[in-house]
Length: 217
Image 1 (tube, rainbow, N blue to C red):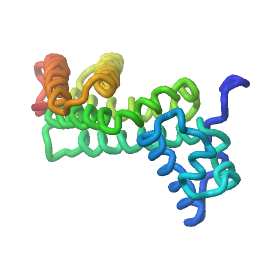
Image 2 (image 1 turned 90 degrees about the vertical axis):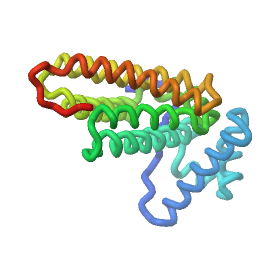
Image 3 (image 1 turned 135 degrees about the vertical axis):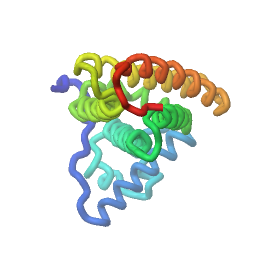
């Protein structure tokens, strides 16, 4: 439950008709452009409405405040990243550890693209860090990694599987966040991705039971 003095971050109502869907999409697109082109200091509901070409009343029909708009942007980013990772991690035409390497590289690149937008979303995180939506998103991401580790190392305890999944996820998140704010070169990002991949793949390989027939390489 959110504190009483916390701003409401959920959308007022989900758009159902094509027209309202386009309206919400225009608002979010305008919000993204403002963050990228004008900076967070210009990120106000009135400026977003002006940029989107809609009335402030139309904006407030769906978003109670700018924090709710930021959260919608963050939620969309989470969903896209999660889908990208799932597409890579569960491409069964590629060996598991190769998929992990591709997923780490993709994640680090994604974190470093549009760094200004990601920084603004990160700055807004305190408004929704403890929200129900954030908690659910974190659970879904963890389940994704657990599913991958279960396939890669099937014959281990649930506790051990959870630890490896948590280690993998926390390592990717913390290093990805660091790279997005301190790295401008994708060449350097690739070096980090390769090094982190080597480290995590080595750890996973050394935790595969000796008698396992799992083809992880």
